[in-house]
Picture 1 (cartoon, rainbow, N blue to C red):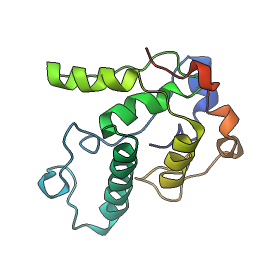
Picture 2: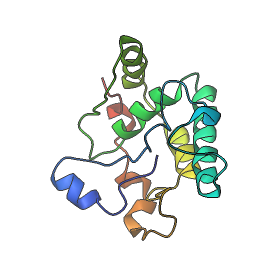
Picture 3: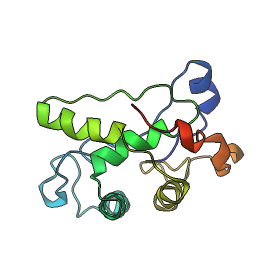
Picture 4: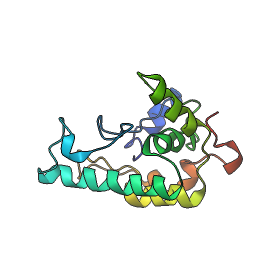
Amino acid sequence: MGSSNGRSPWCRSRKLISVPIPRNLAPIRFVPRRSVLFDPARPENAVKYQAVQELIALAGELGRTLPELAVAFPAAHPAVTSVITGPRTMDQLTVLLKGAALTLDDAALDRIDEIVPPGTDLYHPNVWRPQALSDPALRRRPLSGRAAA
């Protein structure tokens, strides 16, 4: 899930944040062997699939789905005022709205940060990492202000 790779000041000044979840990696039903865009046999994709599998496991531990986690995660960031989703069906909207009501605690956010460290770009492993990304206080609203709805 990551952060905004040094774009935080720019994003914050424009009230935007980037949460780079590669397309086709956070659908309602994630099935790696059926992915058209990402061949799981390619070594550069193995890290992406591992991260997604770990995020799915975390969502399961929380009694939620990956799409719900994907909506709740950016809502915990202090620079985020709203989370924009793009459901195409009512079923997708229903799942995403459940994520809007989810408040992630610090333990869940820490676990996400362990799976995909802040500033990590799964497409570019040698990307520069701003020092500010290591401070959770800069990425999290107070617990009472984390719900997306």
